[in-house]
Image (cartoon, rainbow, N blue to C red):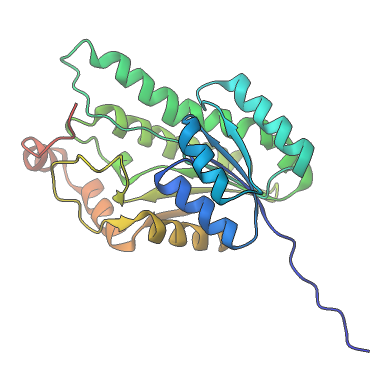
Length: 258
């Protein structure tokens, strides 16, 4: 008699911001791997279109800024599928902002609420279950924009700097639990978020290629990654620039439209 071959169980993966861009690409990638998917997004129509392509996925029309809604999503998903192997906090927004305009204050607050508090809200309901199980990955999509404050992008840079620091705190808190906390800092991605950027975007990748690289990073349990590697060099150089030189170089740089 031949010995039985152990086949790995399909992954269970929950993704926020799943209706377009990187989130959609990640969902399609994991679906091809046979994963059980939970997909969260605010835009009902786009999410329903994706659900038609992925008929086995659990879909949730919800806003990551709403902590109560995220608790309900988590309870429903875990009731049907157990705790997820991977939670990807991908939902994020970006708009140009300038401090001198009072009307931008609301935009600033919205970006912080979505990109920072939204990440907390999607992770929080799963931490105890994952720690109890002793395994799982909490994956936060940050950005190289969090390395230095970009002119005209104060809200977005601030939000991504905050997510990098938050994920580091969470990683230390979960150390030794068996749960991985993974920080992903993408460079530029071809998505609706970057479509109107009036400046050159070096090393820009399609959402599909970025998703493939992120999935490989998660598989390797690499806890911090800047993708692509070329952007990691750029980000490191920018971080090392003295303030007077950084200010001079970027004072007149093109800015994201308000």
